[in-house]
Image (cartoon, rainbow, N blue to C red):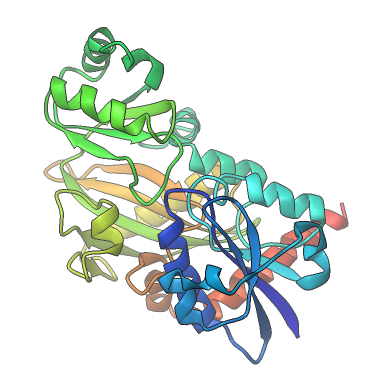
Length: 345
């Protein structure tokens, strides 16, 4: 039986979301095929082995009884690593690099694709170069706003056509952490300073008045996309609270009520974006469908999307005919496929 190491927690601002996702994954894993090993990382970066109830992972109580873990001995404890770590230190290529160094097969994207998908600015640059449809955007650093930032704010307004609203995002965060929607110059300056608490590199982009659509992608050399789903946020946009803590008030429609031609095009673009970044294993790809024009905009790729009971990724694949346990098994199989193909090159 494969010893499946579920790695959760982590040092990022998405620590709590990771605990929720991990508890969901553990509950869905086929116990007849996998022996699950619970590996937690505290907010301080301490690795610990936990053997208690799954409910204690979600509540955060797991740390009280977990024992210290020597990362160097990880290969002797597990056969396969399944990181359920959102945000920096888990979704950005760093832990993937560790698994590569320890020679442990793992789920999801590799080092480079993880780093690119996590970095919204780098990803947009690649998408634009590949001719994929992205909205107008520009970049700024936190340092430009330490002494007020009025000049930089005017530069941003000029580059984006002087139109509001705008979205301000840390280049390296997920789950909408640190993101603000701003409607004027004062809000822009304030939002950039807030985003600077998470990353010195910041993306500012035009707000698209449209519908939020998503699809999931699975595969290595041959990727396929799931059905397209739609999110109607409970807040002004699908922010951190709307995603995980609104009690399900944000509405998820799977499949989305859109014409077949638009759905098909979104799925095609999702695979193109996935391949542009060199993704492997699995990812969720997010889009906007602009009201009025019907234009599709590629927003971003999430290399370790949420796996909570409210999360879109597993729902998309369930609607595509793949059960939650089947989805996890497919992800593990893809991880082994990549690992074995590398060894035979």
